[in-house]
Image (cartoon, rainbow over all chains, first blue to last red; front, side):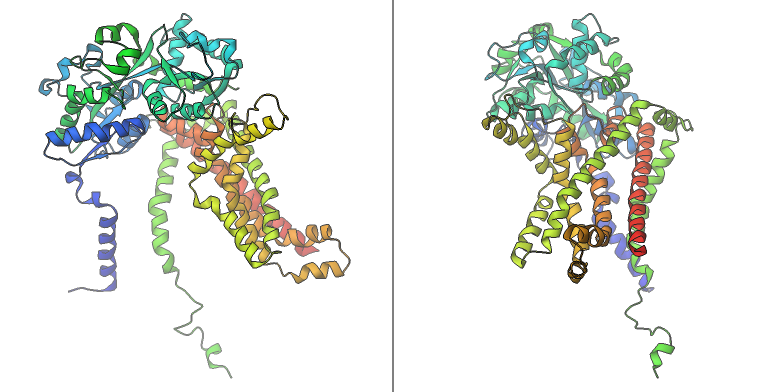
Length: 348
Length: 292
């Protein structure tokens, strides 16, 4: 037997590599990888969605890999043939990018039990929406005595140096810009008026945060008293004792569909489908609607209740009436130009 | 009279090592650094976001765009400001270290190293608390009646420079401590006995001799400060754009990889140029010192 130093070293290196990268040899047998979002989403999915999925699927192994939508796309796009993720979760903008890059498989609508129960806005054949994200006004009730009622209140001189916004890297920032443009006669195709309005907001601006998460920190530090904000993000702050309240502006709160997709070439297609089914089920959506998660459901069989019914909508009919949905296909066409314009023009 | 000296290196000569010992690290570098870098370079020579059409369009776009150039410029300036602040604050600490007793030395090392033992994220969040409207600085200034309304320090260039300087300080202080430790303490006395004052001794003896440490410290601090994505975005905010955030925006939010690749190549070259300048400065000062 040839047992010289070289072959020994090769063997040792191979063994070492297999130990360091177990995925090398067992690519087919890996657990289902679900790329959720970080923060409250991860907590909610770990506590509710994953147990529900495992219960219904003989304790199938599943790994949560929390990251931003755009990072999910980057990772899958870099390894299309052997994607490191099986199920992606996306905001509306990135969802269209992922579909455009041919990274997702269509959802098998015919096989699904719950798809037909979703409200029409959530029925997306390339990946249904199990949840909504709601963007409205958030404010500090200790310093803002009269609750704001409209986006226009952000321009109120009373809030000089107290307003926070985010840049356009986030869905929240871009969606908000479109809404502001709409208020002034613009649309998804033309946000010039929105930029003018932001320029007029400068005296009131205390901070342009790099991401929505940073807004939370700024509220905690008293750096800002009012900002556009995400309903769910606020619930966490409230639960931790930060004085912050959410209000849906009279123009309508912005609703973003959070869609869930099966990644193309996933080795775990069946389990991926089952996980998505679990996320659409009334049981999971009901649990997630209740405190502490307060995630807005999309299954019309789920009766709205509690804080969501109080602050947002009592049922799906009112939800459709009160929420503003945006056309992200149009938004994506010009988003990079807007980001560039924002980079150049918005200096405080 | 000496057999071994004429017989060449003996087989067991402990001063000779084979270069082969560096092979594992070299291999690691080639596979995980050089190869991806080459891939990045290839990607940057594409004109379209999908990476199908070859061309120099991305470089032309960056280099002819005054906004992109201003992002590069402000990033390099930020690095210079942080490095200068670190040097001014770090040098006295390093100098002090060699002039105090053993127990105080341990204390200084502990203070210098302490920031390295906490994560950058934690240190950065601490700065958000310090610089905020209700932060330590503002509440002190308010209670002393120095200012009437809280100053805006978070999300400003000044706040960012101070925070980065604290976060990167160990990278400056440690090389300085090493370099100053190599200087023979007798040189101080010799200089004094020849009639030089303490400032003259510092400028003509200590500073030139500690130059290797200064260069090493500046290089490390500079490189760390300009690439500090977390601190830059958390303390600098969303409207102060520096190269790492610009790069992230193009690569992640906009999925324009060729442009992002071109940005990183340009950034890499710009940083290499600055490093080379540091190195030349070091050689110059050494040559200058030798000439005297």
